[in-house]
Length: 346
Image (cartoon, rainbow, N blue to C red; front, side, top):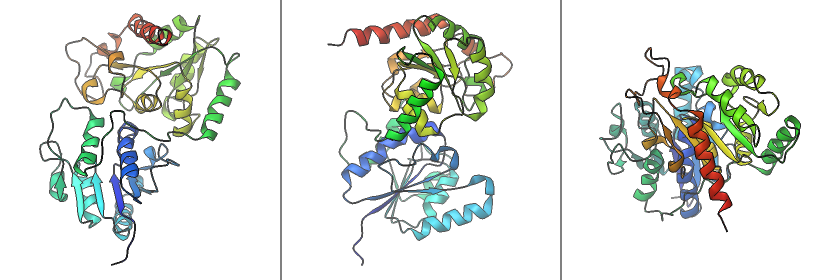
């Protein structure tokens, strides 16, 4: 048998937030498995956060929009790689088929209790079951535990951006703001679920009340560009929109330059936490118990409305009362906690 480096594959095709929270598993594998060649199966919407990451040797992209022929091609590509270990982090039927198609001798997935759509049938090993209260970032670390990899008290997200990405982010700030010296507050204006978005009136009020001390940078993807520009126009002296103007890794660099990030349950929220920026997160239809930003649990603001969390993509006729329930005063109170914490450091 040919002596070659071990070949591992992570299967996580999905959302940006999930991919970000799985990165510490990749860095853990890269650090503790000698010579490992680590690949990641992913879809285009999330690949940008992994492009150039130092823990990932190869991205294998599934172009979902091209339909069944593309899925067949994708599976053939995976089988040709002859992986030794596959980590199925998606827990759905499609990821189970993806894992099985590799024919890897070790295919590790979720316990039956925590998997969906018969996913557990496609993998040869399973992590231990866990309660619904365990954060998703800890779900992924259980795969490293099963592999016997040393654990660390602080998770390592690795190279979330390059020096070039940081230069680009600094250039954007210098181009858009009269002064680069004032602290920047990143405000996330949207998410993949309309029900999770903080109302425009709240964002405008926050930017206005921050204006004596902070410049506000409105964050989002191309889909949020129009909304972000409309918000920025209502407080033009200290607020700019950079929605849709960066790659995901440039966004990571931009968020690293912010004094604080405020926003709803979204991919940028998790990116901000990964680069170490304090995140004041706003929760209505979803729960921070499983999905809160890493190391920012104390800054969570959760609606007290009785129907929350409902886990619905669109609000069922209540005009997003849960997100209206989170006032700007509560955000500013959390910001004062961040500022006091920084000032009290030795």
